[in-house]
Structures are given as structure tokens and as C-alpha cells.
Length: 457
Ligand code: PLP
Image (cartoon, rainbow, N blue to C red; front, side, top):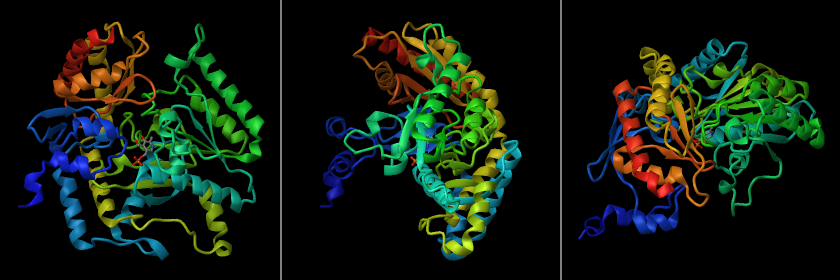
């Protein structure tokens, strides 16, 4: 008899699959959650239950599930040229067109930006690894060989490879992995609601963080600091919006000390904040931009790193001497991923999804404030575009309210994320979500919170 017929799929999963970011013991006790299909904002489980996915997967399915345009573009590209690497100067048409389009998109939507080239990879983590390597390459080529430390922020999430995971500023991701690497420093988390001191204004909070950063740079020596990495809005940390004046003052400090700015736009890229890029929303002028997730709406694993003119000029100037630039991946610039990304951008443009995120963000926030704002354990509700958070406060120390609510929410038919740093539930639905779906999802979440509240007391 076929083994599949004697063992359930859940059993097979338990006996064979090592899940990422999952509890091994929970999985042994409870088994996996198996999904079978998805369309629009709705995902379906193997037991037939449907749920509204208010996380868009992991903040990534920006154009929604089941988009025929992307499926067709992928199928056609696979038929035409199923693979072409980009090593040694090779390339395929979709890859070239995507690089050109991304540069134009960034230049035209982020005033004052000057991006010169696009490097492709496979994931947000590898894009941030690429950023670190290119930081080293840049400073080495300029003879500033000591400029190798990177400053990230507490509460940041930049991925989970050895290098990008070291930039991540959430301790639970480091435990027992011998991380972070020694060249990574973490400065204060710019989340005013939780880390602002009693009586401290938002501007004073910003000034304190900037002063702390200046102290760190002085202590370490500016000649040892190569780059600062920041998500325009910190996603996994808890949807932390930058406090007043933060990026303006930060960039002034970085410029003064010849420190590169890496914008990690893996979540904020492609419409999430109501503009094409979070750099546009918050006035960043980065030297490197990491993109992934919404680049293909997760129909294909792909990342892109945008490189500024000043870095590119150094790379180009040293090329004769350096020879081959020895960085890249088998799948860098994969033609199928590039074709899907182009179709994804077409959909985003045709359906005005960035504008849609800007219009629907306030609808989501208003619904959350109306429906859960009065709950005694809800401390703050915030967001920008279609990226929102409910932060809990005032609950008994031992409980993890966001996790308890998440379980009830799943039972009520809505997927939300309980984040790992602070007690926060995040909402980041596909940008195609309708107003009615937002209201319905928030209603289900509110009912889940009502059901969970006695457990929080
Ligand atoms: N950077 C940010 C801001 C992210 O949110 C993530 C993933 O959630 C990453 C990097 C890592 O991306 P990946 O999981 O594709 O490696």
C-alpha cells in the first residue's frame, strides 16, 4: 500500500518537515496548519475553513492571491527561457527590463534619490547580506578599510541568515545561534509609545535617540562605522513609525560621519505605506535599498538591491584593477522571477494599489479604533498605509495577550500576526482588500479579542 494512504499529511509533516520559525514541541503536540488554496484576501485550510489573511502571508502578497496575470507571466517566461544566470555579463530580457523599471520607479517616487544599478537575489535576508558585502567592498576600494561596523536598531528585523540575522535586533532570534556577529551594533528602538519616557515629548525622544547614536559613533570611532541600516517603518518589531524628525536628524549625523544608509524596504517597498517606497514616505536618501516580498508579491522568491550613484562610481572606477566582482547567486536575476515582477508592477500600476493603500489605511485604523480601542488592554493603535498595529499594555506580566488573541482570531476566521518583540498584533493585508473585507476582518478580530479578554485578566 502507498505510504501516503496509511499516514496522514499532518503526520508526514510532523515526521519529515523541519519548519522555519516554529516550535518543534508545539508542532509535535498540535500538528501543522495545512493550507490548500487562496484567492484574493481569502485562504483555505485542508478542513475547508476559510480565513481572511490580514497578514498577506508574511507582509508579502501585495496584489492578493490567485492573480492570473502573474501566473500567466510566470508560465510564459518558463516556457520561453526557464533559466538564465547573470554571471559573466549574461542576462535575459525580463531581468534587464525589471532593473531599468525599478531604477525609474525609485528615482521618480523618491525625490533627491540617485540610484544607479540593481543587483538581484532571492530573499530579503540575502539582499541585506549583499548590502553588508557591498558596504565592505565600497569602503575597501576607497582605502577606508576600518569602516566595517554596521549600526542597526533594537527591535529591527532584517532577516535570519548569519549576517542579516545579526542585524536583526530581537534577542529571541539570536539565542543559541551564537549571534549577533561582532561587527554589528544595536542602537535604541525609535518607538515612542513604549520607549518614550514619562513627560518626554516626541521631539525630545527623537533628540535623545540621536544623541545616543552620536555617543555610540564617538565611542566606537566614526572611522570604524561603515553603515546604518533602517526599515522606514519597523515591521516585525511592531509597526513602529519613525518619531518626529527622526530620519532628518539621523541622516544629518550619518552624512557628517561618512556612514552609508541602507534602507531595508523589504516590507515597506511596493505600496505598503501608501507610496511606492517608504523612503518616499519618510524622506530617506539611502545608499542601498533592499527590496523583496512585494517585488513579486511572493509569487516567486526574488530580491533586489538598489545601489546609489556614489557607490556605483567607486565600483566602476576600481573595476579594471579589481577584475571580476565576485558576488552573486545562481538565481540572481532569474528570468521567471523578473517576468513575474514585471507583471506584478503592471497590476500595481493598473489598479493604483499604492493610492489604494493610502486611502484604505485610515479605514483600517478607524475600524480598529472603533471596534477594539476601548478594550482595557489595548494601549495603542497605529499605522501608515496598509500596515497597522494594535499594541497591548496593562495586562498581567505573565500573559502574552497578542498570542492569546491570535489563537481566538484564527478560530474567528481571520489571520493576524502576533509579533515577537512587543505585545503587538499586526495587520498588513493585500493592497487589493476591499473596504467590506476590512470591516469584516476587524469585526472578527474584535470578537476574538472579546473572547480572549477574560484570559488576559
Ligand atoms: N527585512 C525585513 C524588513 C523583513 O521584514 C524581512 C522578512 O520579514 C526580511 C528582511 C527578510 O526577508 P526574507 O525572509 O525573505 O529573507
